[in-house]
Image 1: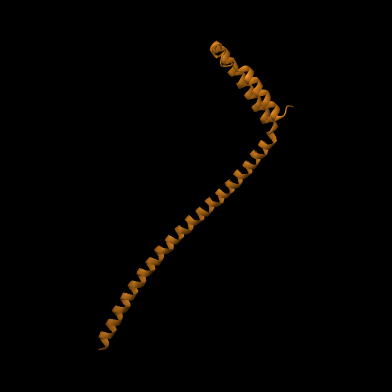
Image 2: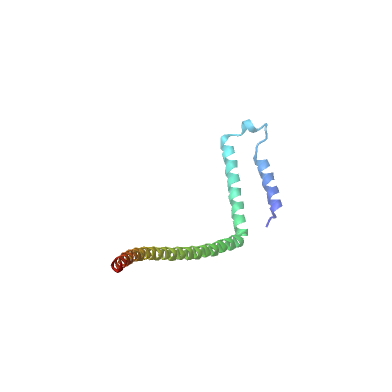
Length: 127
C-alpha cells in the first residue's frame, strides 16, 4: 500500500501530465477536458473509498459513542419531563390549597363579623 505522501506525489504527477500546458490550451478540445475531469472524479472517489476503509474502525467508534450519548440525552430528557409533570401536579395542588385557604379565610372573616356583632349585642344588653 502506498504511503500518503507517495500517493499525493503520484496524484500531482498525474494531474500535471493530464493538464495541458499554456501553449496547448487552445488545442485541447472540450471532450478531452471532460475526460480529464472524469479521471479526477474517479481518482477522488477511489481515494475517498480508501480513506473510508482505513478509517472505518475510528468512524464506527465515533458512531457508537454518539449513540451512547444520544441515549443519555434521551434519559435526561425523560427525567426532565417527569420532573415537569410532577411540578405541574404540585402547582395544581398548590392552587387548590390556595383556593381552600381563601374560602377558609372568608369563613373566618364571616365568623369574626358575627362574633363582633354578638359582642356588641351582649354589651348593649348589659347596659
